[in-house]
Image 1: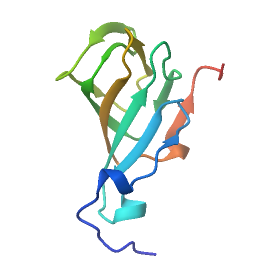
Image 2: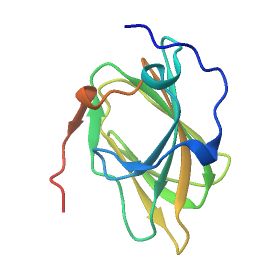
Image 3: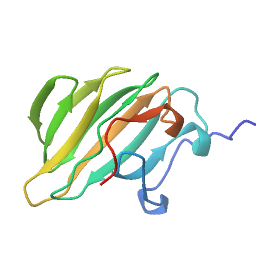
Length: 128
């Protein structure tokens, strides 16, 4: 079934949900809801004092672009701080998670190609 292309979305119209890694997600553009073919864009929020579960995607390459807050990124064997304006490339198969640093939520844009799919997410941590 082909989803008609919706080339424009409004943030206020997009419901938030908690995804497999524990972050709060708004799917800003996704082929299953808006048409398009090969990528998705979401906003993720990680509340203060929390982190996403360590996970990896077998097929998907991700870009994280931090828009607000500070975080500690784990990417395979590397750990490094990120903040507003920083962008991280996450190759397929790379274990990753991000932890909020400080009192403010961490907010980032996640671009996935191919588009994000729960089935492509392998959790490497147990849920708390």
